[in-house]
Image (cartoon, rainbow over all chains, first blue to last red; front, side, top):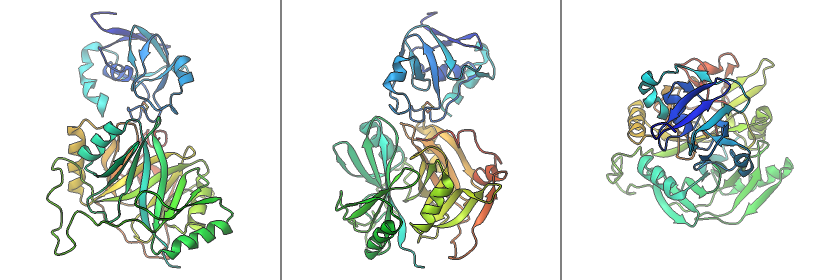
Length: 116
Length: 307
Ligand code: FES
C-alpha cells in the first residue's frame, strides 16, 4: 500500500502501477496506459479474465464466465475485480500485456477512456 | 412461398440483478415496464402492439434464454410444428405463457432456444386507436425510447449449418451473406415478412451465444441523440455511432449493466427486399468493411465479446 493506494504488479511485463480506492484492476491499468484485454466491462463476456495473486473483491460477474472454482484458483475478471491488498496479475496465457504508455504523469489522458 | 413468420416477437435475456436492470432498461433505454413478476420483468417499446418484446430474467450469468418468432397467421404455428417433425427436430409444445398462447419451443443447431407462436395479447401501442398523433407525449424525455424491437444477432459454432437450418426449416430468406473461399456462407442476415434488412443474423462463435439484440431507431439524428444519452448515463459504448456496409444500417453497439450487447439500429437507406431477389455477398476479405463500413475492418471486440 502506498498513500492509500494498492500496488498492482504486472507480469511478465514486470511493471507496477497504482490502483485507487475502489477502482477496478482494468480501470487502473487503462489509466496507467496498460491495455489489458477487455470487452463489455460489466462482468458478462469474460474476455478480461486474468490471473491474480492476492486478495480481490470479485464484484458482480457472470458465473459462467468466472466460475467459483476459477475464483478459488486465482482468476478474476479485471473489469469488476477491486484489489483489497497489493496484488500481482498476469494474462491467462502468460504473454506480456500491451503497454500504450506507462507513465503516471500522462495517465490522466487515459482517464476518460476507461468507460469508452 | 408465403411468409409465415412476421417478425422477432420477443427475446428473453438474463441479467445479474433485476432492480439494476429495470433502472437501465426503463430509465436509460426507455422501455415501458409491463409487469414485474418474481425474477422476471416484461417490457415493451412504445410503438409495439403486442403485449411485450423483452423479458428480463434474473440469473447468475448474462446472455439469451430464448428468442421467439411470431407467425403471420394462427395456422402457421401448426405448419412449423409439422415442418419440425419432418426435419426430425425435437420440440415441445408450451400451451401458454405470460399473456401468450401456445408456442412450440425447440433447440436450433446453434444451441439456442427458439419459439414460434401466434397468440399473444395485443394491448396496442401508447397511442390512441383513433386519430393518433405520431408519437406519445408521456415518454421519459431523456431516455432513448426506441419505437420497436428490430433483430437479434446470434453466434453459432457451425454457422453454415445454422444458416441452412434457418432457411430450410424456418423459411428465413437472406438479404446478405459473408461467404468463405469455398463459397459457403459463414455469416448471414435473414429476414421474414417485414422484408427489412434482417430479423435474425448469424455469425461464427460459441454455442448459444448472444452477440446482441437490437431496437429500431428511425433517423441518423436520433442515433446521435441515443449516443448522447448513453454518454450522459455513463453507458459503455462498444462501437459507433457508425455505419454498417451490410444492411446499410447505422447503429451503436453498447452494453447493458451485465455485459449484454444491445444495438440501436436504423437511420439507414432502408431496403425492402424483393422476394426472389439475389442476396448480396461479402467475402472474408471485405467482411470488415461490411460490418463496420467507416472503420473498414472488424473492431477487435466484434468476434470475441458476447454473452
Ligand atoms: S470485459 Fe467483459 S467481463 Fe470484463
